[in-house]
Amino acid sequence: MRRAGRTAVLVAAVVLLGGGATGYAALTDRREAAPVREAPAAVRPGWLMFRAAEGRVGRVPLGHPSGPRVVDGPRCDRFSTGGGVSVCLVSRPGPVTTAEAMILDRSLRETRGIELAGIPNRARVSASGRMVSWTVFVTGESYSRGRFSTWTGILDTRTGYAVTNMEDIPLTLGGRRHHAPDVNYWGVTFAPDDNRFYATVATGGKTYLVEGDYTGWRARAIRENAECPSLSPDGARLVFKKRVSAGSDRPWRLYVLDLASMRETPLAETAGIDDQAAWLDDRTVMYAKGHDVWSVPADGGGSPALLVRDASSPVAVR
Image 1 (cartoon, helix red, strand yellow):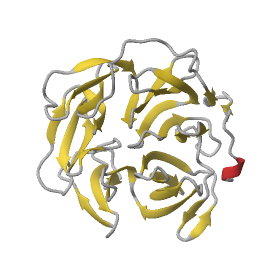
Image 2: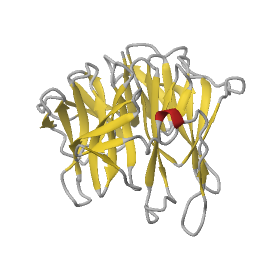
Image 3: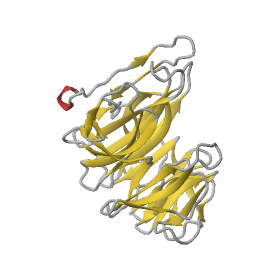
């Protein structure tokens, strides 16, 4: 799909037949109908924010993550924040599960809602707050044979322009334009310029790390076997999960990729982490393990350390 052909309002439906799923995706503006809820006074630098076990957004001081927590934000299944803009993915129960990407202001009050088909999976906001991305699991795609596939969307909060499924972005794989019905994207992370981004693409039974150009609306694969990338604050490295085993026991391991040399370093966390890791700072990554958030040095040394109990979706607000 050409960039010029994208539309600001995208509606998609998957018909419920047999074991399929039904859903829809539509961009809606909820500024006037935004619900009023109790929330922190502001998202401020110096906080480590997270989704607490009870489902609400909470925070602790970045310098004292084991200290007393405040949990008074909205209920989210996935959460991310940056530059005073947050995204809160919420499941909507019904005959078929749908979701909403709620766009929140600095006070964590909803300013906009994007209705989605599927189950919340990943969420990211760029450091400036301009770019927002989310991924949901969906069923019913003709090629998936009853398995889950993904829809990944991107919203430009400056222009209000949204794409709720980016699977038709022109993809270059192995130096050639790639066309296939089974292309799935997930786990977007944005560079400081709000134009370049990285993500995972799956096609032909393999996963690839792609580098994307939002303005040019194109993407190219730069490495095989890399999932759920997250760009460091300095923009120089990516942490990602790499499949190291075909079995179900510890199938992935966290690695850090230096983008200048393309050298990868395995991290000291050897558990099978199924998460889009985040950066606590330029030297440390953090991730959900079990029911808690853990951290590990980004240089491959040290050892994993418990960061925040009963939490997920960690974000360091700088």
